[in-house]
Image 1 (cartoon, rainbow, N blue to C red):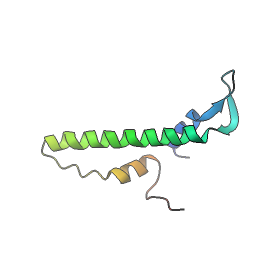
Image 2: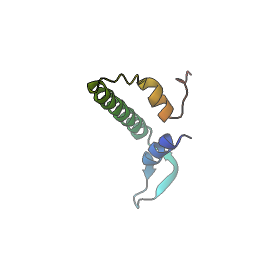
Image 3: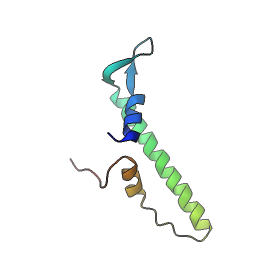
Length: 80
C-alpha cells in the first residue's frame, strides 16, 4: 500500500474507548474524508506553486492530476 494512503488509513482506523486500535476496523467515511482533504491540500499547494512561478515569468507546466496520482502511487487513473 502506498505510504500516503497507509497513513490516512491508520488515521481512519477506529479506536476503542481506551485508545487502542480495533484490528481491521476502518471508518470508511473518515477515510474518504481524509483522502478528499489530502487531495485538496495537494491541489492547493500545486496552485500556490504555479502562481509563484508565474509571478516570476516561469511556466511550470505542472500536471496537477498526474502529480496527485503519483503522490498516491498511481501512474494513471485506475479504472474499475
